[in-house]
Amino acid sequence: MELITTLINGLSLGGIYAMIALGYTMVYGIAKMLNFAHGDIIMVGGYTILVFLNLTGSPILATCFAIAFCVMLGVLVEKLAYKPLRGSSPLAVLITAIGVSYLLQSLAQILFGSASKMVNVGYLDSLSFGGITVQGYTVFTLACSIVVMICLTLFIKCTRLGKAMLAVSEDRGAAQLMGVNVNRIITITFVIGSALAALAGLCTLMKAPTISSTFGSMPGIKAFTAAVIGGIGSIPGAMLGGILLGVVESICNRVSSIAPYTDAIEFGILIVILLIRPTGFLGKKRREKV
Amino acid sequence: MAFLQVDHLKVNYGLIQAIKDVSFSVEQGEIVSLIGANGAGKTTIMHALCNLIPKQSGQICFDGQDITSLAAHKLVPMGIAQVPEGRRIFQELTVVENLQLGGYTRRDKKEIAETLDSVYQRFPILKQRAKQVAGTLSGGEQQMLAMSRALMSHPKLLLLDEPSMGLSPLYVSTIFDMIHQVNQEGTTILLVEQNAKKALAISNRAYVLEVGRIVKTGTGKDLLADDSIRQAYLGG
Ligand SMILES: Nc1ncnc2c1ncn2[C@@H]1O[C@H](COP(=O)(O)OP(=O)(O)OP(=O)(O)O)[C@@H](O)[C@H]1O
Ligand SMILES: [Mg+2]
Image (tube, rainbow over all chains, first blue to last red; front, side, top):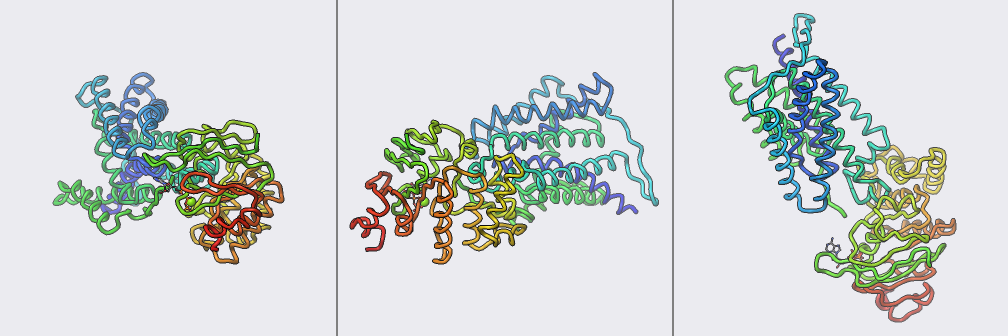
């Protein structure tokens, strides 16, 4: 019973990681860049929820505003900071992304101070079935991430835009020759990634209702690890990596003798997997083309 | 003005001048070949035509419009399609998804279905393999797919970069038959080929490119009979 609860908690945590990892992996696959500011979009989402919760009192409305705001911010950051650097060295783009990350954190500190703030997004009743009790937020997060993953998979597999995204990620030049507007595809990628980050922010707040300017850092790094484990650039890879990492984390935290080393174990898994399979579980070797 | 008019095209890679002042034209309905040794700059010209790489200078007009600085993706709806060097089909997508991407800029579902049917009629093997991942096709089948994918946009001008590269003689003939046929159906063709003999044989006109410059031009027939061309490109 204990094991099943732990497993469900792990899957739920993995759902959060997967939602964030999808943002990393899609941006990497399509724009060919590591968006290190992605974790901070989660933080912005969290603060937006805080602000609109105080204004409207409705967690649902606040979440909608947070998603909208994160989407706008993500697109804006891409247009202002990353797009001008398209075609320049990956290192320049990486450093810019780190710069954006610090910028967002600093802005959050200026606006909201450096102390943690409580965000009461509401409480969902825990569920019991067959002697197993799971927290309400666990079920909510799990449901949320499953819906997100199914919708995203259908979008990629079944729509014209989804296929264009796959085409751009495999061969940008050839996709342009098909008439695919790469800039538009990149914008859509940032829209999806930022919306998922906001949703991940909500789920994280339901679990632990405090926020500070580094709110998104740890989930961001964990999800990035998950994306790399699954094979960065691969959408199913991000889902797999996220869920795997969530389950490992939840099991490690359950065993008191290894709980202090949970983070080390997770990053250790990353290193071991990269040694055995440098492209991650589902990643592929890619050739760069004009 | 010609259907496709390229004037004073210059392309640099860093400090290397890959294309040094190249001008040429293609009239509507023609097959025009660009021939030249490895590294002469043929692919560079093809990439520059579709704005996949930046140009140093030059002007390109197509169908009466200046397309010099038009974004690559805007050329497809205007009627330009390219089969790039090395085919570059989407290996991880299925055959039919590749073909659908070829028709990406077209909106009329019925017309797209008709074009798809005509593609399948031309190459029934593509229909058999429709649901198969394109990376599993043989080289020859991949080339058929790449050509068919380009035709899905219903181009007025088809740019072909070494369509016969790495193919067995049988497939080479299939591809050249197809080029001829597509041209007969009204599509203008600019062809880059290593197989100069076959290319000149089906071309109305050709340009000979040497290290980034056009050194000779003439009708396909004349160039086939030209001694220096025979020696340099046709194996004596
Ligand atoms: N991305 C690049 N960076 C630097 N130099 C390049 C690049 N691409 C091509 N070149 C150089 O430009 C010149 C022309 O190359 P291009 O690929 O256009 O030749 P090509 O005529 O298509 O040759 P091939 O018959 O082998 O395909 C060559 O000297 C090549 O080395
Ligand atoms: Mg070439």
